[in-house]
Image: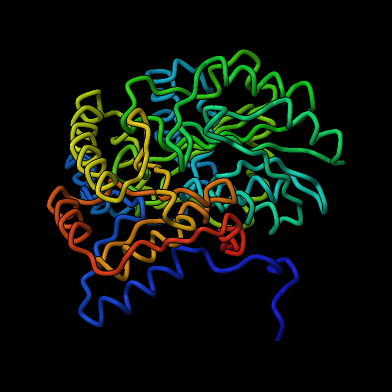
Length: 405
């Protein structure tokens, strides 16, 4: 039986494929050090785990739950947004808990896109934005983010794209940006909101990294008029070491939340109640939690900088988030070449930037989700790695490598 047409042009997620390859190398005794994936390796706060345990022992918490989520969790999200972003949200009508924010990306596309509606997607950017648009029958128009423009959108070029494309309906935005680690400014967020209002675009801001290596967490919902044109995804995966717990949220005006709920309520049921109550406990943690978390990531980042120096890569020391984005030396055709050499020559996996779009071909991305000991071992392996740099003087060499779906 043939698969549905909606899967045309959509391959298996890159990391799903690569993890199988790494698993095969490990079975051969290679013991690969994985610096590619941003899955926090440390546990949540002990109080959060204790809350889950205690609540799970109660006899009346195991039934189906509300599709809108527990009022306790929604109030915790509202208080968290007010405390850290100075954004007021109505806990009853402007918050929708999600089973991870990644599902929210698909829910939003399925809710708002018709066949051939067009969506602005950042390049480089999170590959799921494009996949979700295509699954919903939409069409992707990439907007380039370039180092020379400080990884901010070029609104002049986007105006030209609007003139050339019909049915432009939505724009995905992500700051602190993944993969480049670029932080937002209030002026940038206001410009995006004004741009969305001018062109009647729904702005979808994906905001999972605002607390990692960043002293000034920001939300696009802070901007004047944001609720008129924007909705925001957020997550506990990175900020609270709860990636496997699958707790995310969508915030925005009641009309938009209700519309997404119409789709979501047909796709899944409510989240396990003890998990929701534990998530509420996590959201009540104070600044000490984030300070301790970032102290660890700061130490790791310094060692990742050392590793990149060994590879001859160039990088910006002011990046935020769980990753370090770095330009590959000119002796390599692109990030895929450097990634393969390091994987097979040193037993260390780093992510080629090309998986995030053509704008990332000359870059690699390294994760901070590994212990200092693992990073130090990776440095030693890379210092003594086998093989030679993949020198290629053909300026068009990188163009022959296709971006994975």
